Each structure stands twice: as C-alpha cells, then as structure tokens.
Image (cartoon, rainbow, N blue to C red):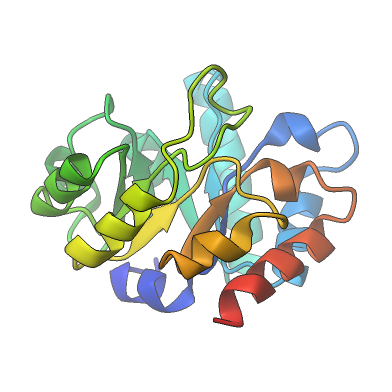
Amino acid sequence: MQGVSQFAELVDIYPVTGRELFIDRMTDAQAIAALAEGGARIVQLRQKNMGDQELFRLAVLYREETRKHGMMLIINDRPDIALACGADGVHLGLGDLPISEARKILGPEAVVGGSSHTVEQALQAEAQGASYVNIGPLFATATKPGVAGIGLEPLRQVVDQVRIPVTCMGGITEANIAPVVEAGARHVGVVGAIFGAEDMAGATARLAGAIRRV
C-alpha cells in the first residue's frame, strides 16, 4: 500500500473511472495500461450501480493491474471494499461513511479523501482527518446531470485555506484545464475527457502535461 505522502508526491492527473465510456471497446486491464502509458500514477475506481461481490471482483482486478504499473488505487465510497482488495485508500462523498470512521477501518497510512462543494465543507473534511479534499464540480458534467458547476473561485479559496492536498473535478477537459491549474489545482480529477477519448493514453498525457508544465 502506498500512503498519504506518496499521494501528495505522485498525483497530478487523477483519472476517475467512467467504465460506460470505454467498456465496449476495451477491457479494464487495457484501460489501466493506457492510463499508465499516458503517465497517470493513480486511478479511482468509481462504480455506483454494482453489487458487492461484483464490485469486489472488479476492485481485485484493478488492484492487480495497478500494481503491475506501479499505480495507486483509490476506491470510491467503499472503505470495506478498499480494505478487502488492498487498495491504497478510499474517496468518500458527503453522504458516505464519516472520514473518521473510514480511517478506523483502513488505518493511519491509508489515503482517505473527502468530497466538498464549498470551502466550509473542505475545512470540515480536513478537520476530520482527510488525507486530501476534493472540490467540485467546477463545471457542468455528465457525471452529475442537472448540477451547475461551482466555478473556479471556491477552488482558489480552498487551495489558500487548507493544508492538505486539494483535488478538483467536474467537466474538466483539455480546453479548460489551463485556468483550473492557474487557479491553484495540482491534482485534477477527470472522467470523460480521458475515458471517453479514442486515444486514452494520449488524452491522459496531454492533460498531465498541462499540469506538470506549471
């Protein structure tokens, strides 16, 4: 397991799976290999509508494949699945298990990320012991239909006010990633612009390059 310090050092582009965007043209193993080829050093397995056993089997596959490529693996929502498959950590939404309870399950070295939509929520996540906090959605996104983007100002404020790493996501593409990075983001979560791309490795490399140039 890689831990909190590795997260801060290794994460820049932070792919969050959109399996429905690629599963009809490549396998999960091929998708992870494409992320690695493009320079990604982490992936978050986010699969909302799947039974526990099927999700566990998929998480084990992701753990095996990410290990091959030296990548970190974060499981969305489910600290129990993260523990069972040996993932590096979990990402929790506002309605999920409290950060402090996930920490008890996964231990002090695990990465426990928390979602936020406001500066106040980000500060609360930090106070509860989050390893990192995510702010978003910055822009309108198909992963949260009907939800308006919060824009870049909350990102700037969170970067200024918290001491833990800050991730952001929501509608980020090659066309708009530059102002996101200029607003202070160094860890950028992406779904559609990577997993919906015909050349997943190339899209990953271009997005990662935009961050690293800063």
